[in-house]
Length: 373
Ligand SMILES: NC(=O)c1ccc[n+]([C@@H]2O[C@H](COP(=O)([O-])OP(=O)(O)OC[C@H]3O[C@@H](n4cnc5c(N)ncnc54)[C@H](O)[C@@H]3O)[C@@H](O)[C@H]2O)c1
Image 1: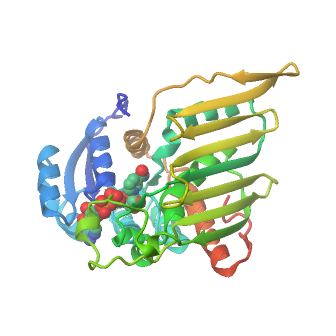
Image 2: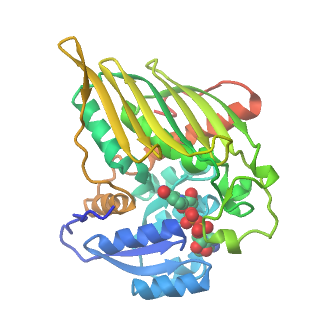
């Protein structure tokens, strides 16, 4: 993730950037702005006083506040990253967009698709850019797979499987992560959405027709499977270990072109290792992308003149948050609103919502035509 970032300012003064949230996510965005050219980090907000001071000093940020609303009141910003618990993504993003500030929000986009749609509406009404940080699609193996697909080597992808299954990785058990009102959901919202994003991206953004899903909470409610991630986990919450979300989710997603996707995500399960993968089945070949199974790997197959052939895809540089920030900055500089006002992220939010609705009602959910395309 240490590739040089090549954002080139297209004239004009430097963009004034702010970051809200001081946890792991906020720190990735700070690093991203710091590495992007043509950007001055001028504002920072977060509730943890020590982190605020340390990160503010590290990046020489002038304006520092505990609460996000004070940051907007006290600082002139052009762009802002929203790296707070999901319940604040929509309120902060909408306030920023209405104040004329371009927004890069962390995933999941919002607590639910209704709030996500309000974010998109605010971006469009105010002519501002709204991006959501889907950094995992920038992994080198995903870029390599996309290249194979774009060159026609796998044909049309008609079936895909994608999953992120942690054995013991409930972030901040009892903190905002495991509360419905602050997180919106469990692993489906948190890590499944990254796998959904990668799969849809590689499948060519097919229009989604139906979603059928199940959720389980077998380990979290018993206090098992915890991991100590997120700085809020130590300071947030009310000291209890409330567990209100799923710890495993499975979904079957049917596209209107007949393609299907099998999606699974867990924070805690009984198989004694983690797994992260995307498997693609195409009309001319297939590909397996795996992480966690002994390191990142991509294997791909096709046919050459009727003979099965294993491909050795070119693997480029790994990308992550820094590239997401750089692309956001580039879109802002170029005033490139088209395709940068949150529609793709809203699609993911609609599918995740449908999955939870399906699980709650033990029924397949049909999405309105065009609502998740
Ligand atoms: N894309 C990724 O790979 C990735 C990885 C980790 C987390 N995330 C996402 O980033 C977001 C934050 O996750 P995290 O792990 O950094 O969480 P965290 O709990 O470590 O940090 C959350 C931050 O939000 C701040 N905050 C809360 N209320 C605030 C308020 N009123 N005003 C200002 N700041 C406030 C807290 O003070 C804290 O600094 C979540 O949406 C999470 O899903 C994304």
